[in-house]
Image (cartoon, rainbow, N blue to C red):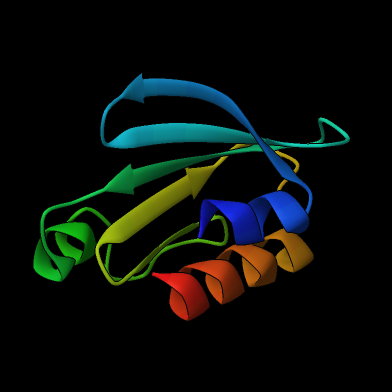
Length: 85
């Protein structure tokens, strides 16, 4: 999954904790924080019911982005998380 994001233009910026990774767009326009949860229910519980653009979850991973995150970025993250987790 991280390899898919890398191919989509996201580079690892920081690993805050074993279950938290921050990726930065190769052109530095935005960052996205991925949190790897023990279960899908925990990941879903970390995201509000009406999540704004740039906030989401897929399977056992929740994610939040910074300002500058675009719809194309969100689609790439969703594609990689849903297709490769």
